[in-house]
Amino acid sequence: MQKARIVSLQNPEIRFEISSKEILIGRSQDCDICIPEQHISRHQSRISIENNCYVIENLGKNPIFINGTLVEKHFLRDGDHISFGSTEYIFHVEESKPGFQEPIFEEKTVIVSTPIVKESIPRVVLICPDGQSKKYDMNKDTFLIGRTPEAEIHLDDPAISRRHCVITKDREGYCIENLSEANPLIFKNKPVKKRRLISGDQIKMGAYVVSFISDRPEDNLRETENGYTMSKRIHLTIWVSSACLFIVLISSIVYFQIYGPWKARKTLKMVTVYTKEGDYHKAHETLTMLLNRNLPQKESQKARELLSQSTLLIAKEMVSGEKLSDARDFLVTYLSKYGLDKESVEAWDTLDQCHLKLGKQLEDTGNYTEALKEFSAIREEGAYFHEAQQDISRLWLINQQYHFKQQTVSQLMKEAEEHFQAQRYLTPVNKNAYAAYQAVLSLEPSNNIAKKQIEKIKDIYRMSGEKDFQQNDYANAISAFELYMLIDPQDNTIKEKVIECRQKLTLTGKPENDEDARKEKIKRLLEKAGSESTWIMKYLFEEDQQKHTEVP
Image (tube, rainbow, N blue to C red; front, side, top):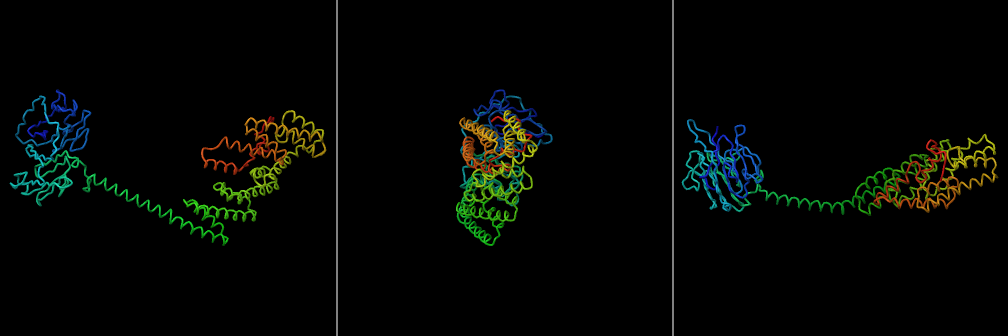
């Protein structure tokens, strides 16, 4: 087994042989090496043998530094610099010579007394091949090491050149430089020509090891691979970051204030040319891509105006070509994003017109369900709303009339009265009082009883809606008023009540921010099955979802 020892840097005469048993180091008297220092734990560390190697472990709360680096467990190598508080050691391993009898290590506690005040002068510790160590204070700006007698550190060894190396002090710290062409300086198993010394560095030359020890902050900075200190690296990083930030700032100003507006204006001129040439689709596509960018306000407003113009021109082309479904879907796509812009008013009217025409086409083919969806999608504030409501009421009655065709007036009156007493005023389909009374009037237009009963049904829904409105139950009020409008779609007073209820509901259920409010309103207006009249399908053709009694 190799012979190992630790040697005190403060006093090289103090050394401890490490036997095969483990060595305990700390402030306590029961430690093998007792160091009575405040910043050392009672049981600070343990040196033991593991896999034929010496290993040191930290047992206490205070730190241990190996070669200036904080460690918890470390496999020791020849020349390692160990620091406990202000106490410093060098670990040295020496091969046992044949026939050499190692002295017996006495098992006794050794108390090491070391000064607490750290030295301010940097120093080097020379560890000789025989394990002896010598300390040299760096009190000169130049330290020559070599075989020449004039050297500050004289080494009489054939493996050492006469002027082997020199340690010099400059503005940044200490450097070691190899002066020999034949014999190298070794740092971490690699030859070096010149190196900035950091506290804890160990340089080998021949069989000797030179350890540099310093308490100065500038000598304790860790060095980067390319030779710059951390301080230089930090300054360089700050400088580079500032320069990059400045470049980004200038680039942003140039792009957003100069290049961006210029590029947008150039694109808008191209769009104007496309529109004049009748290429509306290319103009629309270009504007859509342009508005996806972060445009200045003036250019963005102009682009929205041109987009609205191209959208209307394309939609009108589709309508004139009887492509009503394509025109409707195209307008819905545009309005879903720009539906609240002031430029979109005409687009909304065109969409309502498409719904109305599509509804009439579907009605002509007998597809009443799809026709009602188109009629019900027309906005209440739109110019086509009244006409759509009349179509809805008419279609609903048409759908039910076949049920009553084979009955007489007396039979119809009897069935209508039964439904009225059971409060089946409008539902279910083909089995409600209003449809039966309307069938009576189709056979006998002057039947006053049927007229009065229809007026009673209207009064029931009107009073129910007004009662709910007074109690701030706007949702139920809307349901009652909409049922009233199914009977009398031309009553403007009830229409205004419905609009007022919707406004109240919007205020009470207001989304968290303006963007949410915008999306919610557009979603409501573009609801496929009816924007404002979602009740249509509930009360008309979806009979499996209806109740057989109806109490407003």
